[in-house]
Length: 319
Image 1: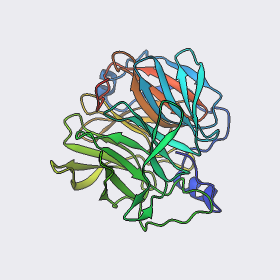
Image 2: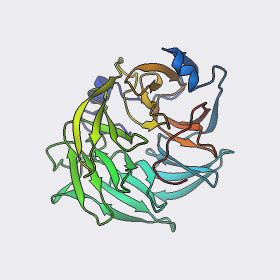
Image 3: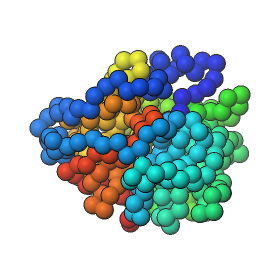
Image 4: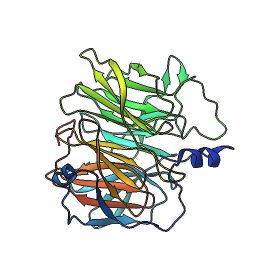
């Protein structure tokens, strides 16, 4: 998530504890267990490796089975293909790209903050706008996007990256569903700054975090693709500059891996914080990858890190 370059941006960021891009890492990698269950998911001797570094600010990782990762660099305004050996290839130049996903047709989908739109990035390095309005009003700044159990796209629309000098047209920050026909449906406007989101493996629960409130919410996902029974799943308190709930990924057993203060917070399905992966740089997002889907690829400020786990990630679409 890119910090907002508005007149009050700095004070807003500090107040929320969003990751500040201040250069050199100030922490050491650590696996910090809060409950023995944490060691069922991550080996005590697991090593963190750096896949690549030297970026402006990394976001939106998407693993491709051909052996590379798509990453948004919000400072250089590019989506980049990054290989396991650290090699980088520019895919598209785009104002402030953010969260990405593959859809059910294996098309690369991006939250294009500067365009205030959900777009498809085409193989020839261009893009196509899939949606940029709700009821005639422009989105704020779409932030993260995933595929739902019904094949539709689900995305969050906070004001965190509302382009400088542009007006907010919607009076709320929503969570939406975008279907294959282009219809946009508002699912909820309960959150103040909705950000990362994920579905449970059985498709019955929908998780979304709120960066301003520093919490994770869970909803029942109904057969008609609506939400019900919203409630607080967990909270990630922290101090200024510590980081807030942002990217979410889930494993096949419905354990949540959520960025937060100091690194990645790991939550069991009952809403208990069972451990933290402390990282050298503050992470914004993460993705499962590798052949067995048991490696976390983590976008953290200027770098991309890899961490092999004992658990396996849930992928909403065939790999």
